[in-house]
Length: 246
Image (cartoon, rainbow, N blue to C red; front, side, top):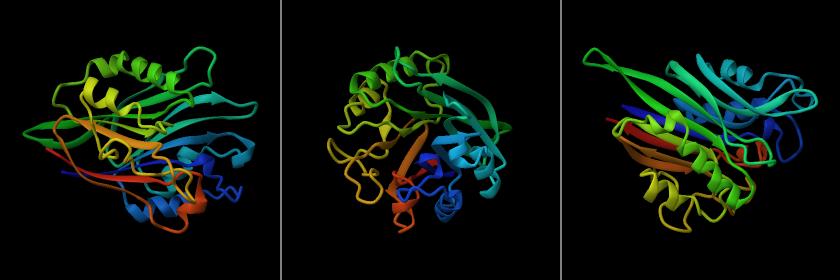
């Protein structure tokens, strides 16, 4: 079963030209026709994004029947966080708090997806959509907190699972933790120092956006968007990865 995943920090749909243009985000995502979309910095009710519920608007315009939202940061007017759009039914969801001390509020949106039916049973896949902090020490603690979350501890050994989003991990320091300790594979870090670069969008130098996977799933390829529009629509480039679920 082929599954295409796209992760994208949309910067509230405010581009590097400082214009709020959600239609650009829709055009970019539509171009890649993903089955799953992991979004970060998604506004709801904020004046800077016309008070819109961006997750709902994007899901509607992209014709995704299923979506989940995990709000992390409260603004004076409105709030924002992560959103997961899915072509598959979402049977379970929870926003996992990854805030460390008095640092900025951060979170990981967990969803369980119902895939196709095999031998009378629905296959499921666990998805973790996160946005980590700006400090290296903070990020290590956040991965530790995620690893101790109930949803993470109950993962089946061979069950398909992915972790994706904006890791803010400039030096790929989290890769050994996720691969050697937590037994994930990276779809976006082919070797130390060779992360797929996604930030800043107009001239990428850092691989901040990543996807990790484990279980009965095989990675086929990963890449960034090459549309000229993606260089201005957000300060991050979207990252696209293709998988086969066995």
